[in-house]
Image 1 (spheres, rainbow, N blue to C red):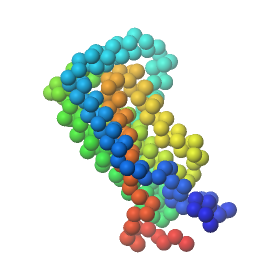
Image 2 (tube, one colour):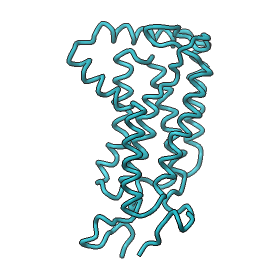
Image 3 (cartoon, rainbow, N blue to C red):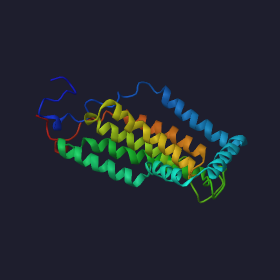
Image 4 (cartoon, one colour):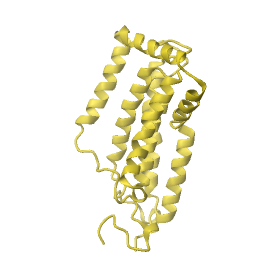
Length: 236
């Protein structure tokens, strides 16, 4: 039987992770470009004041153009990147796949996502200590209790939906998988910036780091990582 082509009448037992969402990224040049772009953005926020002025101008424009119906839609977009519900949904899908295939293999990818995101995003938030658009300073390193740079919502919407797209790859059409992976990040970026929950550059930084983390996760050969026999039932 060809890889990724389940036998007739056995669709519910499709091989876990086949077909894959995308191959493991080749080379590290694009990852390095993402890191360099984030470093350049951070440096510009510290030493190039016009970028701060742009953040303030975008916030003020959004504050003046926020009718009720649009607010409701944008709030829904922002909620797509809410970490708590995303983790619950991802864990539920992981548990379902693990039970269906009698393996702990999905836990590898699902477990790495919050660990890497927390260490990187939360660490940077605490280090930069930037205020929110409507309270606190627009400047980085303002020694504020607020921590808004980079946007965790935007990063979550890329990282966790990439995980979901990978886990559900055998059950979704290619176009649907791509929508699951990429659309939530764009919608969350738009919603959280428009509502003034994050500065524009917070969202840009979150998007860059979200892509970087997603690529790191895709580098893990999670379908072929050797597991102890007690964690995976042999396939028949």
